[in-house]
Amino acid sequence: MPETKFSTAVLAGVLLSAFCCHAQTVQPAATPSELKYLRFLLMQMGSIDQHPGARTAYERNLVRQFGLNNQEAAVIRAAGQELQGLLQQLRPAARSVVPDATGNLSIADKATLAALTAQREQRVELLANRILNQVRPQTAALLRLPGRILANPGAIRRQ
Image 1 (spheres, helix red, strand yellow):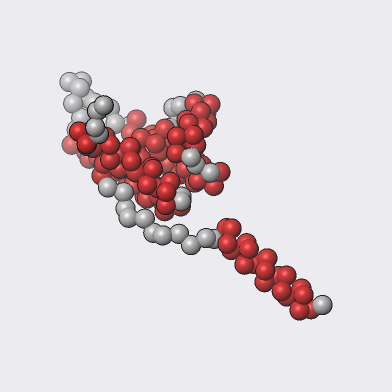
Image 2: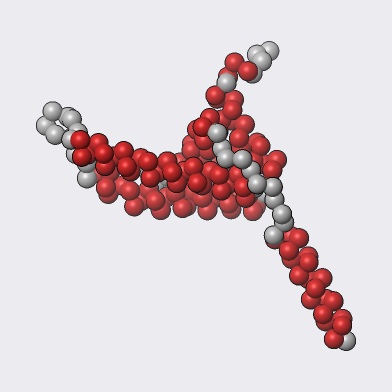
């Protein structure tokens, strides 16, 4: 009997690791053209100005468009929520920048906005690459495709 319990426990552990912790190939970092689309995707999922229903509808469209499974949809949703948190933190600092009477920004204000933008872009790149590494390889390839097409529209044959 103790051997049966041990065998059952080992089998359950092997099955659990096969389903939950499957080995995945490391994806190369997103290229600048791929990042353009992935930035759009993340900004849609993380928008602080968008109605939650619109975000849900966008997610449903991603599921249909890219054939996402539940785990992949959850990865993208979580990345959007993480970006949303950062955007909520950055907004007060961005709103504190006010142009002068002539409509110009001071050098300090320009530096503040540049730093906020850099922080956002750094997070977008991190999240985009995280998504690519946490979805199936075939899904990662599909998520890269819109950026590649937008970067080189002449490569698409018109029929």
